[in-house]
Image 1 (cartoon, helix red, strand yellow):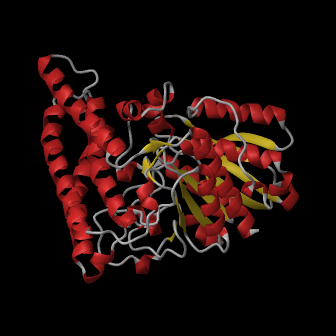
Image 2: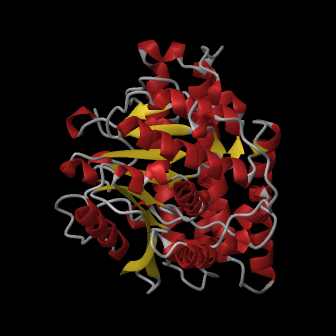
Length: 432
């Protein structure tokens, strides 16, 4: 039995995620304790002037790259990077014993993380999370490369990550993500024999469902429950309402050196129904209702945006761009959902697939409402207060439905990051 497959032992500790500053401080302590095995260096600077810090454990000639914090509202990535580093330090056979260097980019988006930090200083409740919620608009997320012909340059964070990949030529890149509601799933740039079973075992230990019908991988090949293979550029099919093309991502970039990328998603609030692969009893009714709910919710929010913008300190800032992007894609998403369920095979949609769409129909209006609430945080006057009360009511209603209607339950931080660590080590062991 592999160490990563043994039963978990309960360990004490606060149920909190570290901030980026705390993660860097912890990495410095590891370097002081293990000066011959650990190194810390700055590999770039964010748009806001924050350092991008790389922790290295062991030496090559082969390399593994772990990317923490690609999405700032998913802090398990930062915590997971540290957890994996400690695992590698405790097991020499994972690094120098095999001639492998492990490298941990502790946070790819420190500017975004700074805007979420308020949640990390208190209890990790759903209400606090969305009180401090921030996520960049799609084109401002550093894992993505600009579209060909756009004339845009990659972000500084993106360029730093590409430089690290060019330097290390990793045979494995691990990107650590933390979906807010749902289950755990694994996305791969190519198949890794034996990994799906190991990943499923880790999910069971963490007490989280495998998402067997995630919207994030709609139409992708799934060789095993909860595992998905990114399609090649020519295999994407028709146009999508979302611009998330794996071919222009930093996930695909290690492929030029023969490397594989594994995206690990661990839920913050688990919804057990996403693990149910049985046929849904009435998918057409449920999906059409979800599409209508999405459009109704975003229609009101579009009207609120124009009123909120008048009070915002940055009326065209990152939070507004996030809101505009999400409101802009919703009509196309609703149309896509209806097309899928109305197709000849749509009657066979699973409980997981339908539940995933229903969650998205709640999650997008919730995230948009949360972003609007933050924009109103410093606004004064009776008009702003009335507007703030309505937006806060929307946040509370969506949170209540996700808890009561979907049974969303908090997954302890320890379980999230241990699942990341077990899965990353499993990917490594399946490749070497």
